[in-house]
Length: 237
Image 1 (tube, rainbow, N blue to C red):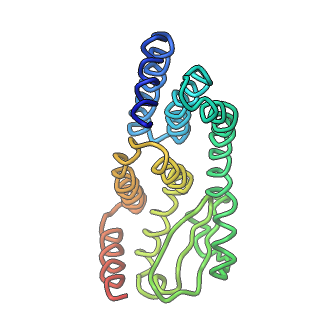
Image 2: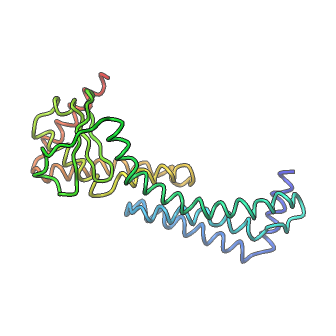
């Protein structure tokens, strides 16, 4: 049954060269947006890649509809339900990625970890960036949206200059909206097979953040010592 269905789909495409060219064109544009995203790391490029990657499948289901004699009822269901569902899922996924990365996640982190705000680093941070301390012994630091989180453990482990290096590192993540990028990349990982080749973005973001902190402080010493101490301490947990 499945072989017959695939055969009829192939024959159907062969009889519709314009449909086939349209699908290949959309996939080509999708690959182009993916390559551009890898080079420029703009999130909208990733979303464009996802939309164009799914579009050919929607176009195929819509164009073939019930024209295939085999399992016509199934194809009709695909055309009327699945294709409409795809039209909802694509924009909804973008909206959910934005809401999760920019609003819901920071709120959940603050509530679940009982974070308290501190003005200790207001002299090196823009006014819109807030710093929070979480009551956790393990040395951790991370950021979501325009919020930077530091654990009590990392404050006790590092020297003031090393803590400053960590804060500047996280500030770079905030300025480049890396939290939104990570959420969107996680979504793409489950939708597009090409997204499995984008893991190097994470290490590139970390290196860029380290460079920003070192450049701001005028030395790599504090960045390197902070990373070394945190890694050594983390290995004990």
